[in-house]
Image (cartoon, rainbow, N blue to C red; front, side, top):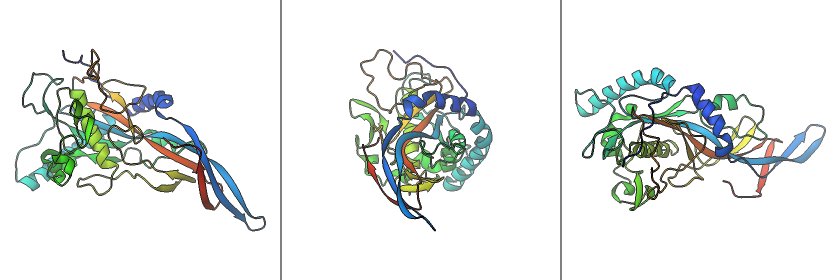
Length: 330
């Protein structure tokens, strides 16, 4: 019995922001986590030690879309970036391979039944774009309680069409042991319940359920973008270490890791809107409808927000002296 189909659904920037706000109580996990200490000096008042509250919470950093011929379900991004990406994809692929064939997105089927919800070998493009919510957070004056994100709104961190050779042939992934060793980096529990491997990080997935295939593609994109020095065409979204952002000392999230909610969580926008976050790879073998029930897109297009964990404290002096954490976060 196959999962019930969802509806083909275009999403807009306003809709993504509304979904994000509605999921904040479930996905943010805001906590006071410690105290920061600062040295503050003035010309006539001397120096004193000041303290500020250290907080932790998840930020909506990226909107990651996995899609076929219908294109990115985020309407504004599809209209503004897709044409240029299509032209770039074909030009790069022709130059690299000598082919004169126009490339298309879509789904490749090796075996299985017809229908986008039950094919074995699936192919999808992916876009990872800075979340529009950051436009509003940058205007906020509540940074004593909220951490700024390192993500730039609407910046395309990855467009697979601009990396057509690697995304289709996967040659750049040959140097990773996980490309060759089954079960090394699986989304889910290998071998009983696996949605698919993280490596090789290209656009093909062997998966019977289209929503799970799209989730694997989204996880691969997040894996690439949150790591520096990967053999792909992309813009790195900084991970690890500390930054001073907008008058705030910020501890950045770690790189995304599969099956680990402490590195990032996903909120679905299309084809169905969800007001909660999850980690891909859940075991649905015992459930009647399975994880994909109500999530199969008729157009083959999917979109999620990637929420990542930050910690921060407001600047209370010229020199940061250190911090004391009351709890591990997240």
